[in-house]
Length: 68
Image 1 (spheres, helix red, strand yellow):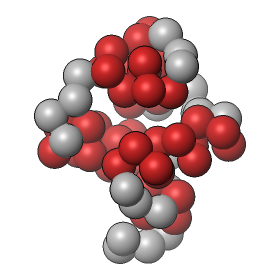
Image 2 (cartoon, helix red, strand yellow):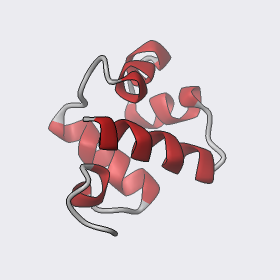
Image 3 (cartoon, helix red, strand yellow):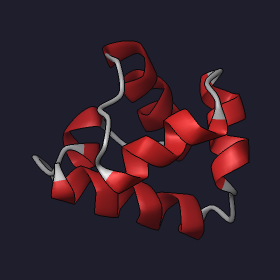
């Protein structure tokens, strides 16, 4: 989970997005998204796919299984 948190934060910052903007893209509240970055919650499969699409990376990359 630690890799996911770091990758999520890194991708959000690289794309110059706020936590609120990402949460809006996912259709969730900002506090819910913050829990993803803090490791307090894991996204649903649907939101994992949305995150991968938003940042144009694979789910494997988000989860630390691939370098792209």
